[in-house]
Image 1 (cartoon, helix red, strand yellow):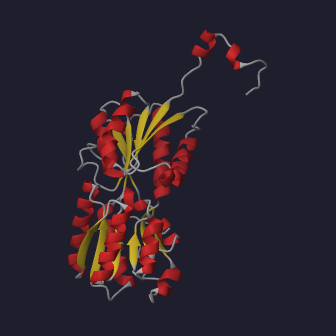
Image 2: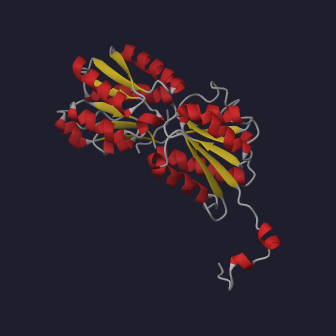
Image 3: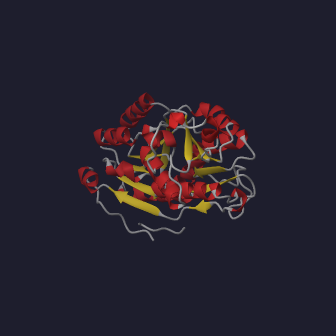
Length: 321
């Protein structure tokens, strides 16, 4: 796996313009944005998405419009939101929230171009024919989830050699991603001689309950699954791991930045920037069938040295190349 740790102001009022003249004003091309989360939860990623658009000469409100549809953490709403965007005949649908959003968009349209960001295999999910030539109306950015899962567990083992029982916090509502994560995690754990205790959480209260179980069963470390629901709860997770003095690993650097022990994963902001650039290219008439799926090769290892010291761990595991 490749890695790098690295108006002109006119007199008069628009209200006095002839109706025919106003009717001739061109409509902006519109991007449909589909997400399982809320606007506040993805604000920084939307900035990266808009940056990618800007790189292709598109600025929201000036020469492109974005129609937002947020499921507010209710994954079951994604199909109706995707269908609404398809009915509005947007130029492209950006569906970055993993397999649930991508599959909802796929079910909603076979003609509107769709962009995804996901860790699962898009060929295996039936979204594209191949990574190099998708062949249909879908393409996007793909992470190498199996290798990332194994590497994250390996890093936990290096940082916490005494760990024998590792909790895996997953979101059962994100079924496709959870199934793949647990399959990869169990395979890696068997190789390392580790026991995995699976804990489900689909609400903040269920996260609290999972940590109560971790404390009661005296589990040694925590593996936080890569899923949109848990991605936007990094502060809650970091606070709970600190309270329980629990070594933990996440796939987003934001987790380590707010006090969690460690993160290892794709540069998510760069993935959103790439999606924005692809959306801009499609607006300029690029065909999704000919835009290869981008396999992310930019990964980051971030360790919170202060948290490591608090836990009595060495801050730097062996280097991985």
